[in-house]
Image (cartoon, rainbow, N blue to C red; front, side, top):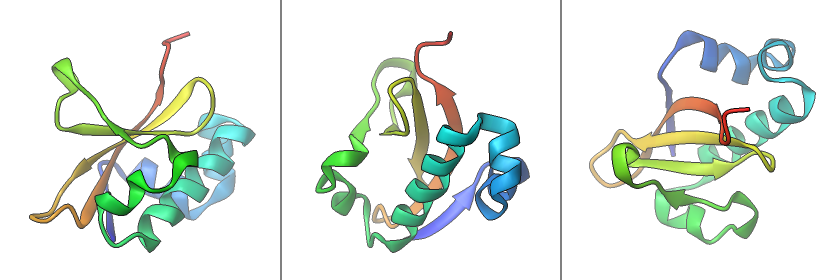
Length: 100
């Protein structure tokens, strides 16, 4: 799958683990890089549903059209579809799910 990043900072955090650790802390940074790598290897969003550890699911309400991938108990990777056939993932944000 092709990966696009909403911001240069998100791309930089993927490419350089020290930047990710500075932005998110070590545990979230490791999971962020791993999850983006998994996204790159998948052919489409449909494949993501088949990987239980991702807890991949669509969001609803004011976040309709976005999807979440679990990073840790409290952190989520938020992505959107940026292609015609769900084959391009756009990394939107790394979110503290409970806002603490």
